[in-house]
Image (cartoon, rainbow, N blue to C red; front, side, top):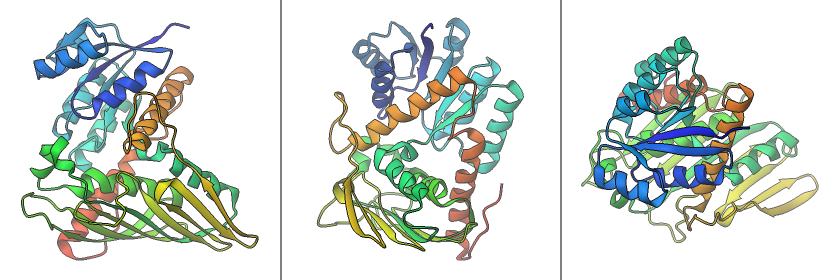
Length: 341
């Protein structure tokens, strides 16, 4: 079986994780990279021994023989680049959020459907080992049907140092981090019927919101709270870990700091270490995120080989984008919103 030939568009802050993960997958080879910044392009090309380097995505897609393209640029360029890939009948992975609005997201999905090409959104939080452990615990029915949950990501980490553009947009934490937690809430508890949102800006040097709290009702009957903050000062800052609590009809579970999963049911209390594997190229505290990148990219390869739809397909991720839009609408209007596609 020949290796899949891939290319990356955008080799900035986060792309090093994707390139490391592609290198770890035996039947994939990244044969070309593209970035408008020549210094960054050459640095990454040298690091991963990729000779084909382009500053124009259209030129790269026209010249290279590829099996897929991985887009890791900022959100404003996503629609144009995904549609360019679709024009070349090219299966495509795109970083989240894969569009600046629900309207654009619908258009991107429609374009890929019309072209008959797979589209996967790089929504990697679902693929974190601790979150997969929670999913498996729920599937085991040990705590029964969930009726309440909290998903929390609160930190004082200086995220702006590595990604200064995050301080410049009118939207920040819901679109950048809350989107992950909203997707995890969907993944674990099912679809959302209503959402109410409160936002704050604590850091006055940024333009968008850096604190958000969302209260959601799920179609299966659960209520969940999603809260995220980059303005917190906790005693133990566990960035970038997501903490959670879920209560069910037969018991409860808690994913705590240091990746401890505690389950309480009729038989008592049990604890398990659900820590992610520390990959050779990974570093703490990012290793949880970094392992999830490898997991989701392995999933993509499997889907390409089998011809199946990715779990985080563009079609599926429309529901997460709709939640983001509903959250901002509710924060602005002060009302509870029904997310709609």
